[in-house]
Image (cartoon, rainbow, N blue to C red):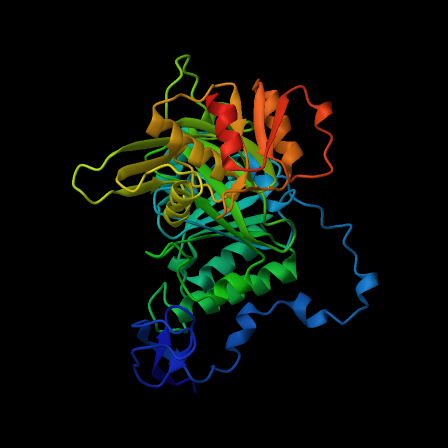
Length: 457
């Protein structure tokens, strides 16, 4: 006989405790323990529901004799999605897609499902009715979707039955937090439900070489909701991010067992769905003919892709005595460090100035190579001198005021040359590169003072 008992489970890491405690002894988080009902034993024959005959016949075999020729990647027909996945979806893999509410996760997944006309797809929705999905499908691809089967279901046992009856080639579950097993008494979205449901889906996917795409919620801290073990169980973890007030969305790979985690995909949200952005540099740069102070162009790298972004800065006299420091799309602590470098090493007095920084387009950039563009934009605004629109910059600024070398400098120069820039300022200490092969003037600077003389001379 199966028995139930009450335990307290950490909603962050999944650790269990017989009584409530304030601080988790495993992950160190506070106030994360929630009471849940768990089964202490399994009814006879219960596990047979989720065990296939294929798993009973499998035998150990040498790794060099494993046949992989029959498992080609599945082309999603979305180039940006394929880029982040490493070339497409691998049969038998589980992909977890997370993101903020309303960012476009369901739109991206349904758009991919409608384009995959060569695959039989089962779309399991625990949040929307088939009528709501049909309305979105008519907006994304009118008249398409005969190959895409839609069902509204949250019970895992019935989801498995639907997979058995329809024999799909791709399963989409929206979302993993809505699934529940009948033999677990805790509520959907709890640690026990998420862990056990994902483990069952994982076992089915591996046994049948069935690719599964899970959509996951995120918590208020911005990480995927549920236990951290969920990210360890799946093969690929993708993050769909962006500001809902802007049109651009970025798809990042946090974990990928079949490809690189340094790739990103860029999309533009339109009324008829998401559009792929193959050349983001042209969209992220303003095309104003008039030169304005406080604007610089940085050659950045996100993943393996170079693109040029516009850095906007505003420096003004503090109105209330205490100067403000505000940053959008750039690390505020790094901005304070760069302002201190300008004060100490370059002699510019900014202690009594309000400084506001913005990365145009609503992007969040973590590439340290845009440091030189940031300090140049701040100085341009402070002196009210415009930087020529034909110049772009790349370089990391150190605490002593030196311009440190950056990675993939040739890709950055090529991107600037392709977009018609006449001059690019690069670190002097990037060695072993033949700059003569580029049809753009490459100015090498070792200190920020040298870069400023080139910009404002």
